[in-house]
Image 1 (tube, protein in one colour):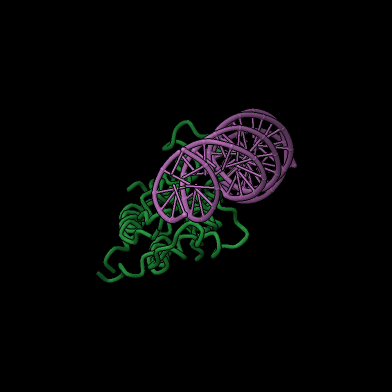
Image 2 (cartoon, rainbow over the protein chains, first blue to last red):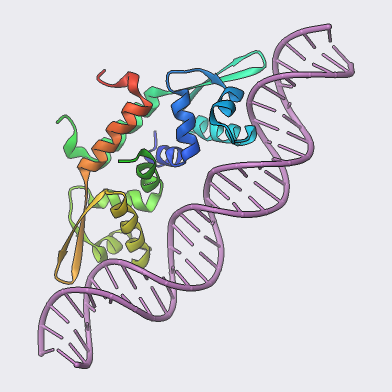
Length: 93
Length: 93
DNA sequence: CCATCATATTGATGATTATCTATATGATTG
DNA sequence: CAATCATATAGATAATCATCAATATGATGG
């Protein structure tokens, strides 16, 4: 994946909080809204769509709800790319 | 270093290009301006200051010129932090 | 000290983006 | 099918940010 898209997706505090909550957890949208507190449901949906378009979350529908979880493989791949491009001398030390 | 500051510093195409040019190279500001092409000197200075405040570049004055190079250690540390926070299950696989 | 060169800062402007309210879509249940 | 619940989308607004031209700062050489 693209380093720029990855960085842009991560460059927002609310999205990083959402990513933390979705790390190792499946949560539906209203769960995320509740965990964050003080952020509206449309705003959360917007951030989730940014993360989805960047390939950083998995999604699964279950009845009326849609569950999200963090795609750790994608994060790991992107971090690897960043290392290769911007820290090539630090790989494998 | 802070994951949010790191992501914000990387979330711009021009800054990523600058970082590529500074990777394994010491360049002065006017060198960077020349390498980029089509970007003004004040804009380059601005981006370099963002990178400097994020701790992502080394600087060295030499006479009238100021040389910059990418701080690969900082990049590697930040990528490690991102991995720990957002891909903990993928560490050491 | 003055002129010059390299870089930084200021101030303005346009583009992007985060956020909200209101509303639409889509699935479930009676 | 109607009502309801969960999520997404649309449209508006405010904040952030990238960029440039103009100017300031700071070092060097005569």
